[in-house]
Length: 326
Image (cartoon, rainbow, N blue to C red; front, side, top):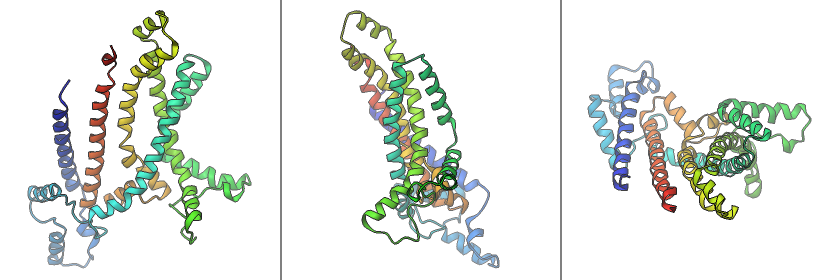
């Protein structure tokens, strides 16, 4: 296996490559932020001065050199559409994404592993088949489709059914804009606004983890060395703990590691549908406004989280290699 230092170097080079490609794609895309933010009656000199202020003057290599040099110094630039440092914009939006992503990932792992273990113990049964069809359908369903369906059920559907007011969950925003709430009442209001987006993210995430957990646990239980251990008369609890779980953990850890970036970047469409001011919605707004520094800053954060998660998962899998137990 390759040394951890080489893996870290590969990760840094991959991050640089992603940043470079993203810079080129963003700058070569149609549209110009200057034309979106300056008055239609502006003169050529005014447009030129505005482009200089936005850092869009000079050749593309020169712009890339300035941007990369600033990034290496920890500067992501100033948002064109918001006139704020990109780091400030990210810092304001990040907690909302972390909350949705972190809580939903924790719920997805717990429910996914429980469902997968339940299926593995009943592999081939009618319940296993039914649960496989259900988890596959939920995993394949688009987030925005599930989100819109839940909004209909929780609002107009609840009204048609005559549900009490407390059961009619709010569909948009983080908290009620017209209510001046503080303390416990504010926390309850935020929790009520969180139910629907968390349900969408948790259900789809748990469905995906359940599918992989079921397959990993079933394959591990039927592995030749597990059959041999059972034939030797070892206690079932010892076989499950030492051989089955250890064998099945590697692919599950990889899956969870690949899911970690979802804490930051996995709720773009959900944030947009439910009007949550997280990184995903901020990213979409930056794209619409041709806000180059903001789009590049958030993309760089996304790429760093994805690459770091893959690196950590890869290193952990080495420690969980079943051959180490032999």
